[in-house]
Image (tube, rainbow, N blue to C red; front, top):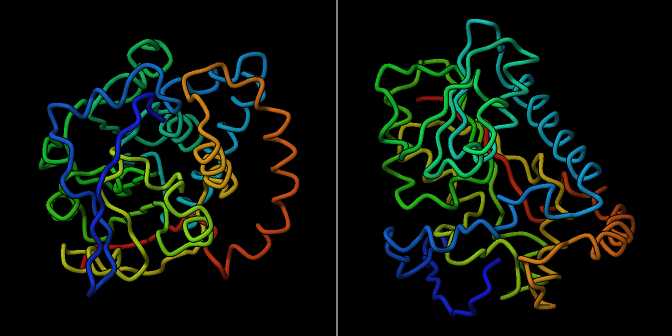
Length: 285
């Protein structure tokens, strides 16, 4: 999702199969890859005349996230939900409105909310790294929706989150799964690479290892997530095609929908075969 064509190197650990960008882009240069034309920042507006339709799909995604967290943790008006890498904090807003709980979001950039102060004014939002979070925060639930693969210091940050958590805090992490059908199908064109924004590519084995080494006990790992696996499939297909990601996307909508319908039978097996996404549920040791 960047107009400049560059090649990046990933290494793979022969012991645990962890895949990591090496070398990483210096942090001082990283923001040049998160421009205003970056599709996740553009959101529904990128889809032109289909903006309202896409906005509804984003709302459904947030609802799926909310349904998942309610199955994993009892959220009450006294609870605090922390979303790490909150981006456009629509999920937190839904938590605040539907669950009446306290919310806290952190991201390295405020591009997801800076133009919409009135929309998110009831939320606690911070620009910074995980290590900048207050030591007395004590969240009841921590979510990372496609954040950890971007993190330059995942081990240190997971360890810090453990240190500011309660004994019954739940951690939910959703990430692309390197050991998945879509990665094997699209290979170097797989959207999960997302170079150089993704610095870590996880599989169930090494994600559990990382969590265990940094104070967390994995309760379960699902072979799917709240994100529709078709999105990763479609982005991979477009990456192979060489699409211009900064254009108006409305011309792509008919083929997008047609492809989604053809993809539906594959989704029937996502609970046994990872199509591209996985979700880990963990609690402090």
